[in-house]
Length: 392
Image (cartoon, rainbow, N blue to C red; front, side, top):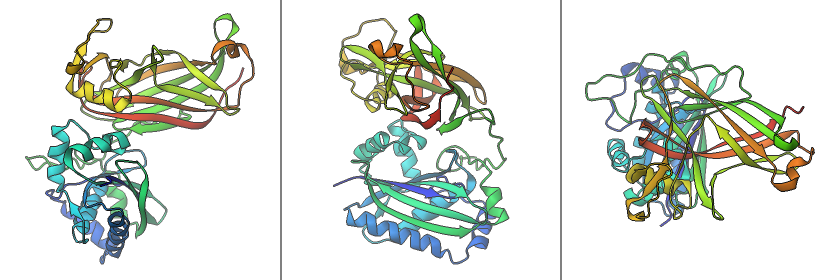
């Protein structure tokens, strides 16, 4: 059976919620005011289920909806809960209780935000028998909240179904979309909820930004520089900001064995098709596994379940799932800067020919906890496209 990963894109701010979660009365009132009949929800569920069932999918789970910056809000959490409940009424589909989903994630040391990555979704499908995951993203328009949904296979990462819905935006919905939801799928045992609006750090000087879990990465500059022996290089400068108000964040670049070398999984291609190799990185830590590790997802599992080895030390027992390196730690609400330098390989490095824009990507692992004993990790790829180069 093919496993499916459903990506739900919602215009405004959407995040996850648990079927056991008690929704605040003002949230319920806001939703009822915006669309009493909630026909959009029935139509969205129906369109999704048709595409999913055709592909042979039987068991699904709905996780937190997020906004375009990757944040989970009270509005998003409630809407995700409503879609999960509505999907229960569809024939041929079994829906995993959201509280049970939280337990499953904890058992396998996965995070909700990490499930946005296909490799992590595959892990959940393998261990929990879940064939599809519903994930939502919200965008606020002038007068509407647009909900777009994609169903993506957790086994193949292919889109197998898609649907859209639109609801009227109200002042109540707008307000709920600015409130950060409490951690986890459900409310805490004390019944407390996080309803205080949070201030998200501003990156007004950034060329582009990307939120990966609780870590915001801001690209500050891309410029051509002259390296040793007049080699042409491209320098990228980033700021890392931890958006979490309470917990420290961890981040590290992925290093893998390739052709007898241990290389950071990153590349840069300019607008005329030239490939630039990573020459130097500063301010960002790196992690790696043994030669048997072929991708970031395997390395993440070693980090979560294996044995940490001091850098430089040899270790040959692969049964212990060894890993080397350490994570860069970013305190709550704080920022750190790192730099990456790229250079064309061989004699091409001395050619002054360079495109006016670049496409960049780098594989990262993000988590929480101690830099040497991380928790709740997920692997992701940082990507920026069509970014102009400042040429000397």
